[in-house]
Length: 234
Image (cartoon, rainbow, N blue to C red; front, side, top):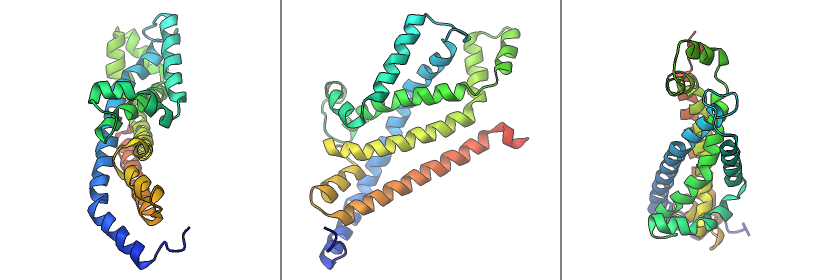
């Protein structure tokens, strides 16, 4: 299978694909990853906050049936494999985008797959906040909304940034799988050439680029998290 992996013909064709198609595929991957993560955070952040503040001993207790439904809903979406989820949400994708194929269309299933994950990460970050700080804010007469906006979220910013980095690298991995159903980006290159046409060198290059992207996102997120961590400045 790999006997002619580095033959002159394969190298020439791989170079042509690398120069003419991979740059645009790289842009598509970056565009989809950033947008999908952004929308996932917009949806997942308030849900994660509700999971913490709405519990029985939280600062804004919500009805028990609602909290049970919210937890089951998030867990249900998280438990569905991404490839199956992409197919299940075809009607939603077609309703929002007008089509189920293409780079933009892949954003919808990516967001639906990522926002429950983000919600749990936000929940984890907020639970790390020192309860004494919250009690102090309550004793000073701060409202639940003020505690969320001015205490809980600011105090958990380093953890939120770190967890957002985890989310964006996860979404990046999902984008590669979206190539199976016609999504664009590096996943499409790897599947169309590396899998369907047995051009494994092209697939290898696409995988290496994805690994580099993960390292870039991870390094940037880690550095930003350290910069915003007040504990490291003492």
